[in-house]
Amino acid sequence: MPIGAQDHLDSLYARQRLLSAEATSLEAERDTLEHHSNRHYILQVEIAALRVEATRISARIADIIERDLQR
Image 1 (cartoon, rainbow, N blue to C red):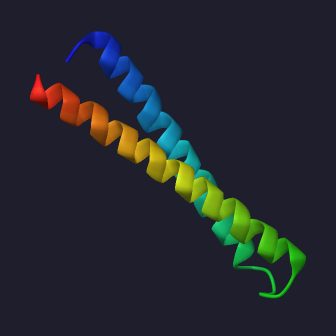
Image 2 (cartoon, rainbow, N blue to C red):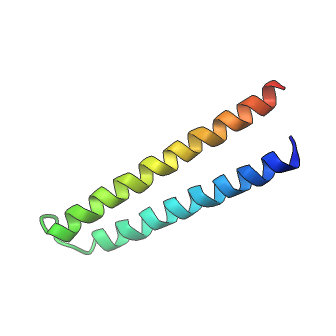
């Protein structure tokens, strides 16, 4: 794997970890709130968006690794 590709993967992994960590942090905050509050709802939406983006990045990482393995 070219060094440039590894640097790109490293940044994707870092972004994925950051998104997951932020989602986990927001989940902890959400768990302290009443289920029917506005803030609880907003956190749910934010958490879902962070998890979706982390999943997209995971798919990009998998695609890059698969392409490299096919070479």
